Length: 179
Image (cartoon, rainbow, N blue to C red):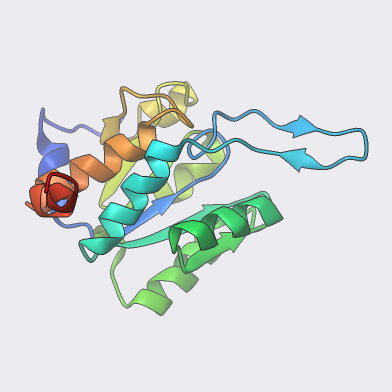
């Protein structure tokens, strides 16, 4: 288990320049619905999407790294303005190395939110490692923060808000909506 004193995750969130999201179980609730012709559908939570957009407006780069490949994810990422999308790469370290090269940041300046053991290679490298409450126990014991909200039900928004608050950009990001 990563030993993180209480509220140390706030200090870690302050340093984040790139926030990376897993898809299944994080941006979605982890359910995969197959149609009779084999098409897979996923459901995304609207509050998570706006959180990603607000975070990006503060200057934090957003990215997706997912072992599964889906045109639905490409569409959702385009809708949210996520330019860095890596799919179908089971060794997520490969995609992570490409992302670091593309953005010019260090691993310590990245945050990652995942839910299963396939995410551990990244969760143990980034500066701010996050899991969802339904995540695998081995994952939850190795992260800096476990969200209160479930994957696909506000976990991503919780993390985006947390990063913005830690960086002092939350009020400015939401100000246009209070006018």
